[in-house]
Image 1: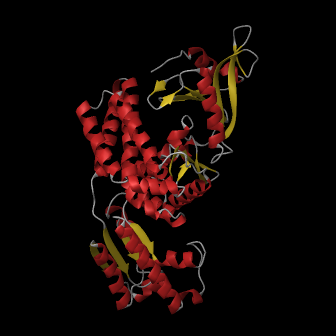
Image 2: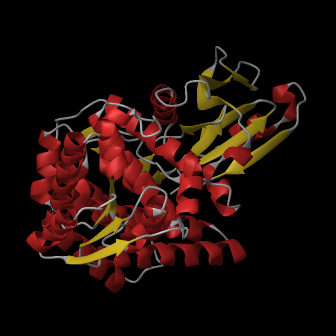
Image 3: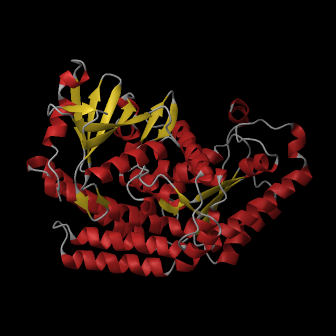
Length: 456
């Protein structure tokens, strides 16, 4: 709902004279207008009141601008430059930071190359495993440093999100009341099965002040580095969430775009960097809630649009709605073990099939090479000396691999074990992990000519 007239502010911001005669272009979303001028961007918050955001007064917008600056400097300090007040001066004209009455406020950002936006790169097929690995590590570092909150339980946090979703769906007209009620029932049933784990993670400090709006459109390349920007600044409660719920927005966005292998890659690299495996049972539910958020946000945008744009947004909202349902469907866990000598392609095969195995975003890949390097405290890219492959160390590596596989399966998630498995006892042990968890098991052995192995 629009509650204030911002015509004068928009005219001021989009007037080239305001910016020394420089060319001006604009980008509009349902809650903001971004005015691009030279190497700067001026972000104005629309005077709207929605179920999940209230920018209805200039005081609220100024406070939100200040929060946006401070919070986004956590991840993108070079992009976020200042907050500027728009004031009405004695002669009636608007100005930046004048002595007159406050009319509005804007966040001033440094511009970046739009070709570096991850949503554009996704559409154009320019995302790569290396970029997604870098992104996963960036998110892991951010979450590790984010402020911990113990003010609410984990279940209370998600109950608040579900209640907000229900209110937002009720305010749209694209979905029937019966459709909304059915979806909400499904979400509530899934939620009820996770309350104990949500609270346990809250007690363990997994609820943190996160990004809150972590999808591909809010990630860009800055100096070649994946950078998170445009976090959710207008409601600290909506951004103070389980770190895996924060990550789930990105995973859902990739899944929605048909990039499930990248969703699986990001999840695996994130879990390699963070001790968050206990939260695996929550990830499909978290992804479903994120899809529901996108469904009602997109529906709101559709109702404000016209013509072809309205039809396009309506279709997209319904796609998100359907995705929510699919993500809530139970999928059985299973274990796949891939064996073979070094160079036979075990890791390549694991990455190729992982997103198709088990609940979204696919199987947890447990690779002996990564376990070995983690045991030695080095990065996955580090080349280990020969002594790191002594028999007693290899026995420890396999023991840890079996333990992690067993834990993953017992949590109801799928796993792929990637190791040489050249000994009968190790093959029997990994099969026993599946039997103990009561899940299906597939053992694959890869072979290749000696010349190929040497070349690889």
